[in-house]
Amino acid sequence: MKKVEFPIFKHVLSSSDGSKGIISIALSQFGLAFSFNVVMAFMPFYIIKISPYKPPETMVWIGLIMGLNSFVAAAAAPFWGSLTAKFRPKTLFQGAFLFNGIIFLLMGFTDSLPTLLVLRLIQGALGGASTIGIFMILQLSSKDRLASNLGLYQNSMTAGQLLGPPVGAFVAAHIGYRFPFILSFLLVGVSLVLCHIYIVEIQKKESEPDRKINFNQGVLWGWALSFIATIHLTFLPSILPHVLEQFDLVGESALKSAGFIMMGYTATAIIGNYVISRLTDRARLKRVIAILCLTSAFFQLLLFFAGGVISFAAIRMLQTGVIAVVIPLVMASFASELGGTGIGFLNSARFAGNGVGPLMATFVLAGSNLLTLYSLIAALTVLFVLAFWMTSGKRAS
Image 1 (cartoon, helix red, strand yellow):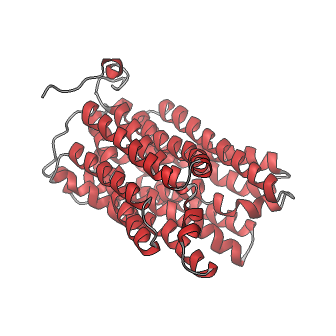
Image 2 (cartoon, rainbow, N blue to C red):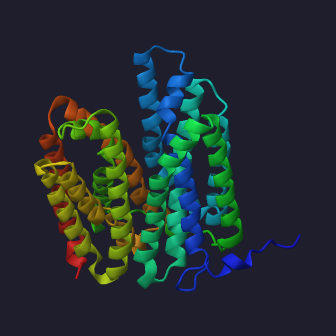
C-alpha cells in the first residue's frame, strides 16, 4: 500500500539543520504532555466522584494515584534508554504512545480506584519512554544544534503542561469527566500518526548505549542539577493557596491569581528555555549551567521577601525563566559521553523531581514555614552546583 503523505507538513516537520523529524518528535511529545495534563487538571475531582470510601481514605487514594507514577517513571527511564540497544528507537517510541492511548481510554471507563492506580502506575512506567525521544534528538542533531533541539523538546513538554489543565477543566465541566479521557486517547493517536509518517528510522545501537555510566565525569551531579531544577519548577502549585493567603487572597480571588501566576511563570520558562538554549555554545555549557542554577537559587530566597502578589509573581517568572533550560543543557553537556542507558539515567531526574517537588513543599511547610522551604531548595541548589563544578567544571572553558 502506498505510504500516505501530507505535503503541507513536509517542510515544517524537518529540523533546520536538515535532519528530518526533530520538530515532529517535539510535536509528538507535546501531544502526550498535553494529554496527560488534560486529565490531571480534574483527576482529584474524578477520584472523589467515583470513590466509595470516606473522605480521609479518598484523600490517601488521591495522593497515591496522583504521585506514585512519577517515581515509577524515574525508575523506568534508564530501562527505556537501555532498550535502544535491542530495538529500533522509533518502534519503541510508537509503542509507548500506543499503550498510553489505550490506558487513557481505560481510565475513563473504570469506577475502581485500585484499577485506576494500577493504570497510573503502568502509565508511569511508559512515561520513561520520553528518554527515547531524547535519544532520537541526540542522534538526529548536529553538535551545534543539539542544545537548541533539546530545548525545543523540553519546551514542547512545558507547553503541553501549560495548555492541558485549562482545556481539561473546561471540557470536564461542560461535557463530563469521561470525555477528556477520550480526547486524550484521540490526541495520542494523532501523535502516533505524526511519529509514523515524519520521524526517520534510527537504527538500534548495539554497544554504545549499554556502556557504563562514568560517574567520575560529573554525570551524577548533572543528574542532581536536573533533579533540583525540576523541583524549582514543580514545588509551588501544591502550596500556592498558603502562599497567596499571606497576601490576603483567599477563595475565588486566590484561585484566579494562582491560575495567572502559573501561566505566567510557565510562559517565562518556555521563553527562557528557547532563548538561552540558542545563545549558549557547546564550549560554555557547564559554566552557563552553574550560573543559571545559582541565579535561580537567589530568586528562590527572594520569593520570601516579596511585598505583594505582583512582586511575588514577577520574581517567580524570573526564576523559572533561568532554571527551565538547565535540564536540556545538562543533557547536551553529557550527550557525547552517554548512550541510551546514561541518557535514561539523566532523564529520570526530571521524573524524580516531579514527584519530590510537591512532597517536599507540603511536608516542609506542614512542619515549618516558607523561609525554611525556600532556604532548603536554595541551599541544595548551591550544594549541587559546587559538587557539579568540582567534578566536571574543569572541562568547561
